[in-house]
Image 1 (cartoon, rainbow, N blue to C red):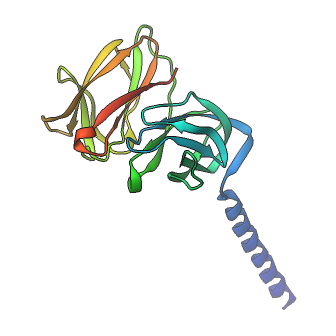
Image 2 (cartoon, rainbow, N blue to C red):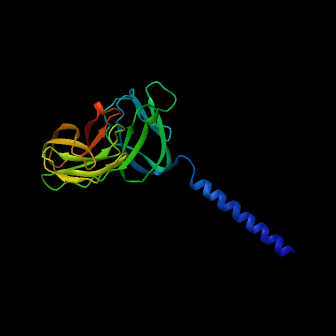
Image 3 (tube, rainbow, N blue to C red):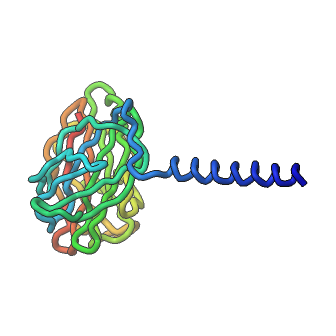
Amino acid sequence: MKNKSLLKNVLAGLSILALSTGLTSCKKDDVDQSGTTNVKIVNASQSSPAQGFFLANTALVANGLTFGNASDYIATPSGSNLTAEFKTDGATTAYASDNFSFDNGTHYTVFLAGDGQSARIKVFKDDLTAPASGQARVRFVHLSDAAPGNVDIRRGNGDNLVVNLSRDNASDFTAIAPGILELNVFASGQTTSLGTFNLAGFLPNKIYTVYVTGNTASSIRVNQITHN
């Protein structure tokens, strides 16, 4: 009887330990004080007021981030299940919030996307591998709620740059020749353009993200940010 009682106590103890370990590993704002990550903050929400950005209750951008603008990379402690919040200037509640993990020694771009009830945060890991000499590198991100769920992005001459890019996702980085880039955005597989856009000159040895945004058909547009 004593052996059975002892076994029950051991099993109960192991169950409590396992539960405790699970809760600890999933705890909110599990900050790694010895690790550093680097984040670039972008306001891609057309109708949003100026925003601040907070990660694990620390202000990385205190205020004033308006649509189409991006911060430089900001070094901050890495960690798991970190609370990310965009807050309208002067507000105490979040305009959009979510939880993400940020690896040590890695670069990320954090977007505020969508408008009003559709406002959301999207995070993408950045591949900052240097472009081939004399070339630029670019990726495309689909953040428009007005555009179809999947889009093709083509050069002005009709050549595809990215095909079937789904909303809230990013393409891989790809090499591109320097210069001004004329883009057309299409519903995937279609031939009627949702808009034609001329982007400022891409410079050699630079890395870019081009993101599609817009909450109405007439407001679909593209913006570009530089990573280096």
